[in-house]
Picture 1: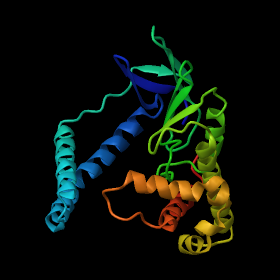
Picture 2 (picture 1 turned 30 degrees about the vertical axis):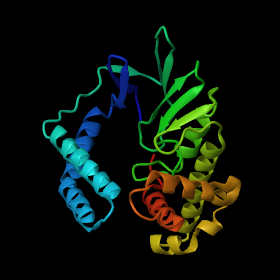
Picture 3 (picture 1 turned 135 degrees about the horizontal axis):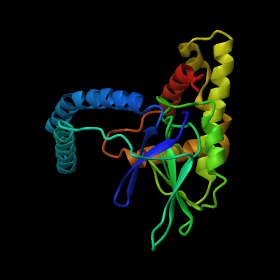
Picture 4 (picture 1 turned 90 degrees about the vertical axis):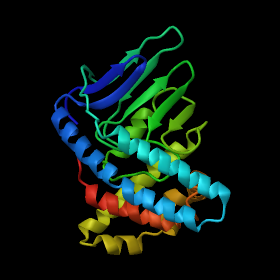
Length: 260
């Protein structure tokens, strides 16, 4: 992303939107994505109704009903949605001054998307990282796999103790963050070598396994991901094998390898 980073401010809330040079691109992309998302609602609600009809568990039926309620509310909310582009821009950092505590909104580079920002609270020594650093497998669908690890390295220079990621529990050290970073880097290196050798995505997925990835075996990261997944989706059936997630990440890295 080139140019200033932009935010929309509303009261005490700061929403990252886009760079000033890509506002129209962001607007177009956002509307397409939202339309795709809303169009999925009927399919998802039908599946939940079918599941509730099969279930003999009152708790599962209640869960399905609540999910349907939320999906329909989401669909209704977005019917008249109008995207507001930013009116305030900053280069790399913006400080929100408050009598209780200051918050630093920082841009460190491409990672999960072209415009991830990190909210750092010096007083609490906590940093909110969204999906750029969290406690589950990364989503690299819009990601920049080659530079993502360097972005995490830049984030790591801040004096924080707690990581508040977009998924998973609060992290009170940097072990998971480091494993998350190393996993992306290792996948990228292996996919880059395979792609240069002319291998297809299917061939890459067959060759690169959970057991072959040092980043998953280090510091019990594979076991952590298994536990985190089971806790995150208790109502969605059995946790799929880790290899399924690895294969999806391999496909995403293969497609986005040279994004800049």
